Length: 561
Image 1 (cartoon, one colour):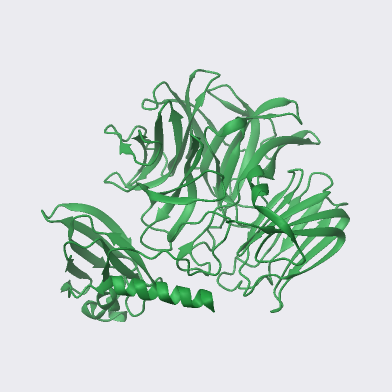
Image 2 (cartoon, helix red, strand yellow):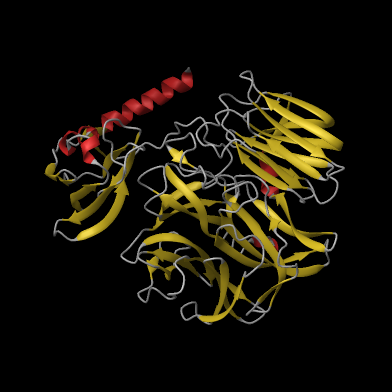
């Protein structure tokens, strides 16, 4: 009750600080209107209705110069939520509505005109019961791929594909968050906004002396690669005047650049996605790139477009060797439909990546349904290879039951290598920072906890609540298989693709599982790193009961003060 009163008070303060726009639009046609902007205000709060078509908005300044374009699902007959537009000298909004107006009524009568508000602030107080506690999320709006991640001067930087003007995919921009412990994230100002080369799609950052260099995809009529430079540690960027620095004309999907310094050849390398292959380049200055080779034909899974690559060296004491790992995210084509992360292990000489497995061998980094766009932090300390993923799936990411925000990142994970049979695999373990928030033991599961299960050869773990919702996990040591069933996990009706059973090979015996629960997600790891599985869940109340057969479970509180 106290929390409810606090939220109501905050909403009341917000309403007191906001005023209705009180400016009628100038209607120019059945799909076209203009709105003059009141000067001296900081934000115009735009009402969004997610079921509607987008309205294309051109922003003009006082000289009638167009300074920005954005697409917003302006409310027609109801308001789902508001998004802020920072005015910054805007004088006029030129708005074109899409869709069939005969079904929507007269433009001048749309509810958006009555509900627009001016305000000197935007309330980001959490209003979502499914917002995770110890996972990174945007304060508001849509998020997908992690971008440009790097470590510098004790700070982890996470950029991400972000829509500031709605909680569904659109208006791709680089949002930015920072952390000193990979757990507690602080929202930073927007890092990169779209320009006349296009939206800002995925890319990466490198640390070059005191400078941070971002390389990203400009997604306009074609996808091209651009640079931006930061002299303040990645907080603000200046785009390179010579953009774009890399183009192609032979494929439509040409994106997600991942540059890195290769000490073996004393030069920069670049890997990026081109259709259903990865292309590798080299450079001395990050600006002029030489094509070296391509990888991917007939290797691994080709059920969809290859995206978000990464290429790095991993040294493992277990296999007593150093090998290169090529990360390849693919959509669709995942083992259970939609998005997933596959990888290849081999060698790289600065020009060509050679996979050590047979072409038809496919290796998945995570066997859940909600683990995609995995990339690593550049310049991580202690020679660690730390990765984050986008915790969703393109099959239903726009429909999951949240509104204030959509999507979270996985917990941080450290990668290594292990062998099974004649193959080398990538190991995945929760990063050591996760132990820092492990609290005392609990008698029952909660909405935010870690469960450690010591298992025998056969085990079953069932999480339930008083509504009869449940998640069932089973381990079969004889078949070396682990499964998770979320078909009865709670709200599964927003997409036919959501209810499912996911299954993973364990590559040997599993002695202990680590299960991380955080309101809307369950991430399961073999403690030795040989299996990972990430799935979203949307229960109507927390799973607060657990039955374990064939093992002993210990529940730990997860503190995030």
